[in-house]
Image: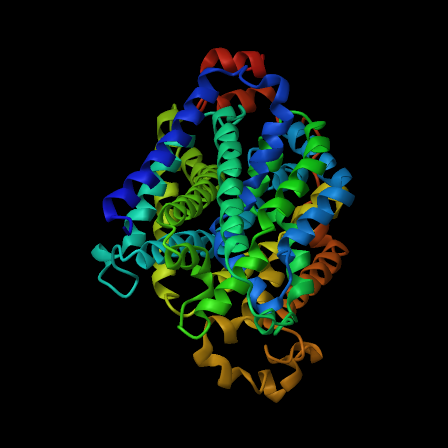
Length: 534
């Protein structure tokens, strides 16, 4: 018998309750799994495997015929051959006591408040579509079971709205119980590790189902239909460890010891390979059975077990996708709430001369989480029916890739200065928006085809002769090239050098104490700062 609406809802809520219980247990028992924490940390990096892994990568495999998703290839290559850069990133972030990507970049570049606010803005621009992807994936999968309204329904009937509100509540419960962002959130890391194992078992169970099906006709095992964007996706996968806020939070902020990266160097790539094993067989089996039935390839992972009468497995897969989406949203919105609170709201509150802000900080973070999730829900309604999940994910990755020059400067050349980095980031982001305008706003494509001033080679479709490239590759190459060029040019000017790194100790202890007292207890400030606490 097909699963009922109540069964699906209870299964999803039950697993989310388990994750919450695991997180609370991890917080209350700080020594739990202490000897094996390096493995727990490595598994928590599986937050990278969002609902896109369950749904969008199957679409990628159907399009290309590759068994390993291209973003996985890039990330695996980074951990195998670039772990030195990751270890340096973790060490420097710990030295700067950075609680987010914006914190790290700003701290390494003279604690420039404007740069931190700009980095936060770019992250919001890039991550909102990715959170929308999670909402859309859960709503689409629920609709396949015949539950709830879709994005075409009135807002109050849209199941994605209630998914968004539930995820926002879950994120608030997970990460906004204390004002201090300095301590490691052991409970969150433990929950992410459990989520990673659950997702892996769900995907391997789906793979076992495919192996039990009759052989798929060889004609269906098509050679790649379109793999033009694969090099760009591989690069985006490698950059994800540095630029995705939830990946940065799990991989850098929550890394207790630099040496834990050595365990992640082999365990995380192994995890990615294992969870990707069923992707291509699922794509091939789904295309064989549903290719002529107008079933979205994003939903093959659910359509296959449902068609075979494996309703328990279908519910298992649904809960796996829900878990993947929820953990990504929790980690991403937690990181975003810290950035929005610290770099957008706090400067305004501090200029007003408010007193103890600890309660206000928690309220601001909760409101930031709710605002980001609702913004993502609005985006999911705007793109309903117009984008495959794989395309939305790639869009987010490419937007956030523009942060990579800033991260590299913070890692290796902070003397180039915050103003130069800011100029490059603004120019690169505007270029990204321009080149992707025909994709984001198809109605403007005919207008832009001739290019500005009649120069066709400057049009988004032909940018500097890259018309043969995919729109993703073209936007990535153009935005990074402009970003780096403007950054280097600005760094050679007097204005650009004006934002150079401030000397250590430039702030007096009295100033630091006055600021810290608004967020931390007096005893904690005295221990950290000493002088200046009156």
